[in-house]
Image (cartoon, rainbow, N blue to C red; front, side):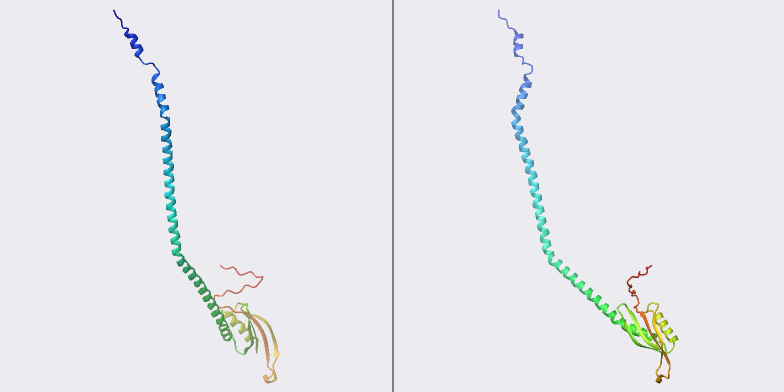
Amino acid sequence: MIRINLLQVERTAKPKRGGAPSLQLGSLVSKAPLLSSLILVAAFLYVGYEGWMLYIQDQQLEQELQQQRAEEARLAPVLKQVEDFESRKKQLQQRVQLIEQLRRGQSVPVHLLDKVSRSLPDRLWLTNMQEFDDASVQMDGQTSTLTSLADFVGNLENSGYFVRPVEIISSEEQRGAPSQNGATLIRFSMKAQFLMPGQEPPVKPGTVPPATH
């Protein structure tokens, strides 16, 4: 009679515990080169993509730079014309200012003589008149009465063209010649400052200009 020990067969056929993990670890170790290769490939692809994007951006910037240079070259003649125009405009403005100054300078003696002649009273006449650079005028003359001299000073101050006060530098009596029946004349010298309307009086050295309100 033959006996078969099935229990022993089942025990020998049953796999050992702990065999599966060893097989999984071995599979991972075998796949490590493949994973490393995939990582390297992914890294190369990323670096290549970034390099390509930088190249595209560089080409765009280079194209924009060339466009800007072309635009600058196109506008260069226009800018040169604008600069020439501004230069001519400045020269014309200087010429206009010079002409206006000359006109004002020419009109000053005319107004000066006109205001002085209108301010002369009876029995007073001028023998000399001199204008200085500081707009001051010295007038020498003769009169038969001090009243005429005072009227002359008042007329100048009230004309609106002479700065107050008009200063009398000197006055002296002079006996007239026999042909003048021995009449006594008064020789005088006076100084005034003539200003056109709207013109500010020049500030003398050492003086403080008046405050404007």
